[in-house]
Image 1 (cartoon, rainbow, N blue to C red):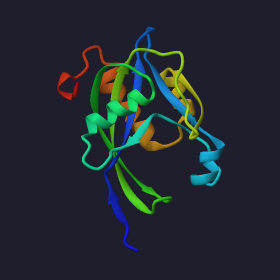
Image 2: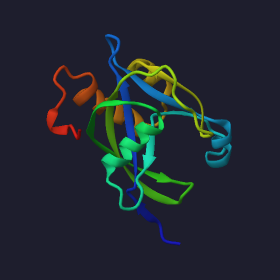
Image 3: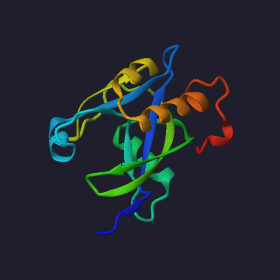
Image 4: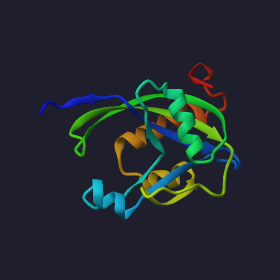
Length: 158
């Protein structure tokens, strides 16, 4: 079987600025999802989604935010992409990173894939996430967008 290159998935760093320091949305993998797809390994991650055939990435981002009952203020491209080998799908995935500033919600719906969620400062996020792609994506989101006093307008999608 030939390995495929997939480009239909993205990461989305969702944040709000209600406090002095931005807070980022993270989800903790449910045990059910971990057992099904990750050999029992649970981890924290930011929202991400698949892009449907024929769907524009901005529409997939908006769909992801709607599914979380979040209202966005702005959506940016974070000027970062990373590559992983997905052992479950047995392919290589190129994952672009985007960011969305939202209005903070105290209730976020959980799917079967996640057991808990929370808003965390960048330092708290870095204590939770394990994977280099997530850490690098957060770094560039902070650098260009969420913790930049003048976010790069040329990266704003909406």
